[in-house]
Structures are given as structure tokens and as C-alpha cells.
Amino acid sequence: MVGDPTSPTTFNRVQTKLFLILALAGYVFAKNEHYIGWKSYFVGPPIKEHVKTLVILGEKMDLDYLSPPHPEREAIVLVPPRKQLEFIKTLKNFTIKYRSHAENVKATLDRDDERIRNWTNIISRNGGAVTPYNSYLCLDAIYGYMHHISMRHKKTVTMVTAGHSFEGRPLKYLKISTTNFHKKSKNIIFVDAAIHAREWIAPPVVTWIIHKLTDDVTEPNMLNDFDWILMPVVNPDGYEFSFSEKRLWRKTRSTNTDPQSFRCPGVDGNRNFDFAWGATGSSSNPCSDTYRGNRAFSEVETRTVRDILNTYSYRIYMYISMHSFGSMILYPWGHNSSDSKYSFNLHLASSAMVKAIRNASLPHFPDYVNGNSGKTMFYTAGGAADDYAHNLGIPYSYTFELPGLSGGMHGFELHPMHIKQVCKETWIGLVAGITKATKLTEKDRS
Image 1 (cartoon, rainbow, N blue to C red):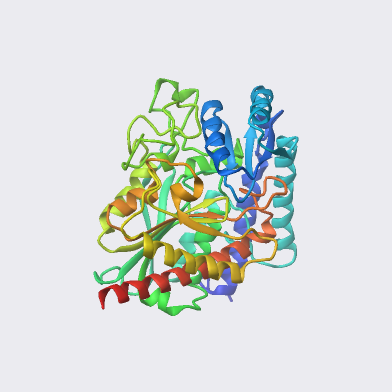
Image 2 (cartoon, one colour):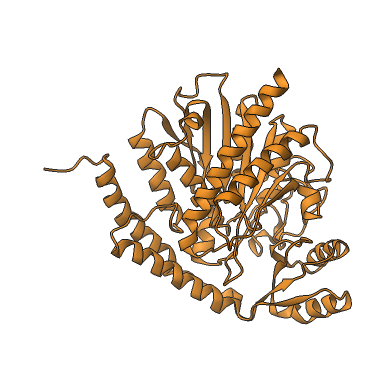
């Protein structure tokens, strides 16, 4: 007798085989040659005065901060061979502490790739299910999971293809609702991830949220009281490129924003939104990792997020953009460090998230901090998604910087054994934050 293809047992068996094939395919052609001769450094933790110096240094030398400068923790900066002597000399001139993070970035990335391959094989050999929330999977595997969920939960889940990326990949998200999005009084929670391609830990968190709202509903009020929009990969072109060609790629892959774009493709999606666009914290140089584009919303990927936000702005209660890494929950305004009129409630709700995550976290994970984006990070950036959403009137708008560890390149590529832990604790924090925000809203109305 042929098994029911929608049953959990059959689904997990087929899912594991499919995801294993797709996951391994994503690594067959992985290239890290670009990083030959590159090094990365721990810097600091700097005093407050040095944070601004490091930010300016990063902009002047076009350095890549894997983890940003902060007075309470070390930054991690990636430095190409031609800039290493100047970088070290500048740090010494300002008496800024530093130490080696990875002497050979390429070798470190190669080892991390092997670790991920081995992890996927271990799950399969032990009869476990390879899922997007316990492994780093390629785009097709994530979309395959979303499709299966939409087929298995037809009454509550709708899969939407909003358009196509610059290179023609579909831009997909799920709408999850017990009322088919028809109840206008029902608030929406919108969560997206991977607007920055290399932040691989972010899509698993969003797929775990999908899992908790479909296959493993332990907080039914989250499903019954809210509608959800969940987009695990905002930047599919960059995400796939980070699997196949250049692991630490950050931007989109467009080549139509500047004459130099064919040599230096892509735009930083989180500097491309039309709020304080180009004001600060971004670059007009197409070869920079923080290139903002030649105009706001030059990228189809950011226009897709914009259209969701604009369409449902009157109902979206909370918007969260998942990033990595740094163990931070940040809120507007990030373009000028000023306080939003909602800052008190934004802080209280994010504090509830931080407390819940700390209680659920592993001892060796860094503690989360929360606060105004500009004040917490000690630098400002215009054109960011959370500021844009908040300016639309969405009261709770956050950027999550998910946790990273210091071994290997373990900010963007946490050991796979930690993926599910990050997913679980983030969901716990999200539930606590939504619950707190709801109570604050009820109090404000009374």
C-alpha cells in the first residue's frame, strides 16, 4: 500500500532524502579561493571613543565588520591582504587592542564547509530528518519545505510568489492565518531573513517559526490571535551565491545600478529602503559592501518587502528582520539615534525578549543586549528596513542580530549543532515580546 504523501512520517522520509540531496548539491561547487591571504581580527572591546574611530576606519578602508564594534564586546573584522599592514598600523596609532581571529580565512571556511557536510550526513545516517531548522540548506530546499507545509496545512497556509529576483529566482513567502487573512482587525506579525546573503543562521529561525505555527503548535494563541507573513530568504540571488561562489557575500547580485556594477555587482538591501536613504552609514561606491544603490528601492528584492509592508501597514503590529551576528535586538531610529515616540514600549517589549532568550540560552552563548539601534551600535545607517517599517506607522519594528560564537567563522556559520538551539530560544523570545507588546497596547488603550 502506498503511504499518504501528506502524512508526517512519509513527509519526513521524503523530506530528508530531498533536503540531503539539495544540501549536498549546494556545497559541491563551494568556492573559498577568493579569501586566499585574507585574515580576520578581534578588535577591542573598544572604549566608546574608539567605536567611532573604528566605524570611520571601516568606511575609509572599506573593511568588512563581521561583528560590529561595541564597547561591551570585541568586534570581528575581515581584512584583505593589501590592507592588512595599514589596518594594523592604524590600530596601533590609536592604541586599539587587537588579536588574531583567523590567520587563514580560506582554510577556516573550508573547514566549516566540511563540518556542515558531515553534520548533514550524521543526521541522515542516524535516521533523523534534515530540515531547514537543523541544517544550512540551499534555496531550493527551503522553498521545498515551504511548499510541503503549504500543501499539508491548506486551511491555514498560503504560499505566495511575489515576483522574481534580479537573476530570475522566485521571491516566496508564506501567509499563515486561521482566518485566511480576511479578519481585518487581526494584527499581523511579519518576519523576514537573509536580506544579507551570508547570514545563514537567519533563514532557519524563520522556518522554525513556520514549524511552530503548523506542525508543532505549542502556543496556540500565537496562531489564533495573529496572522503571520514569513519570508525566510529576501535575497535569493545573494544567498545562492554565498553557497556556490563566495561564502561571505552580503549584497544582492544586480548589475544595473551603476557602470561599475558588472565588475562589482549588488546592493546592500538594508541600505536601500526609502527612509533616510543615503543619509549616513552607507556607500555610493558600487564596490563597497554597504553600497546603497543608485536610488532607493533600486532592488526588486527590497521592493518586494516594501510592497508587503505598504499593503498591510495598517495591520502589521510587529516587523522583525533577522540578521547575524551580535546577540542584539535593535529598534528605531537607526538613521540618527533619536528616540521614537514608541521607544518606551519598544524597549520594554525587547527587554522581555532578551530576558526570555537568556533564560532559554546555553551558558556559552553571548548575552543579548537591546536598545535604540544608533545608540547601541554607536553608529547610524540610513535606508534600513526597520526604520522604513516604523515610519509607516508599524509600532514594533526590530532588527534581530542573532548569536554567533568566536570559533571558526562562527558568526554567520554557527556549528550546525547549535542551529536548533538558536531557533528555539529566538522563538521563545519572540513569543515573550509579542505577549509583552500586547499587554502594553491593552494598557495604553485603557
